[in-house]
Image: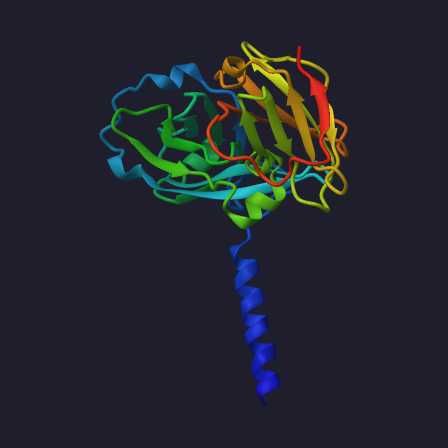
Length: 291
């Protein structure tokens, strides 16, 4: 009996763990209910930025709901990327041609929009609820977004908006699968007196990384050749002969790139903190003279 209860508890625990995982998306696309003809357009219609007065026959509550959630698209061995899913509902009206959803990053002010157009035949079903799902807005880890839902054409006062914060690397599923979270796993220490920056790649058992220093201007310009950090053998690298004021400058960055992925995106840490004590990885260092 006890064994049976234990198995049941394990099953419940595993089921709860699975339910907490972020849903996966294999293909990006638009989802409309059966019986409705919809088509999407990714680029923004600049003319929809200007509103017009709604017809008297159209209620202001024509936009029913706006729901946001996170999804993940994975391409082994490159890892996964985060996506924003948008679910919206619309009460059909003969004056409405569709919906426009825009996602704006509050950090960079970058905006991406998707539009769904409803066929003329579907618009004749006045009052019917149309549920639309937009699967793939590309987003970054820990990004704060503001999402707006408008009608097409844009009628004044008919709009929904919602703020959404993407998961960060502390979320287990994100931390294990999104390459951008590698930057969170870099360990470093700056010794201003010895003119040394020490860097440790992620824990043993993972892929090796090329680590380099770069100076961030318009791009992060090379400050020398990359050094390979061996996660199984010598996981630490040292950059030496660096002037103290340059090591602590906001423009000095550490970049890491996986060696097992041909076109891996380098992960970057800038604004290095120069205070703190040394760590236990001061031995078995690869040294690179920073000129």
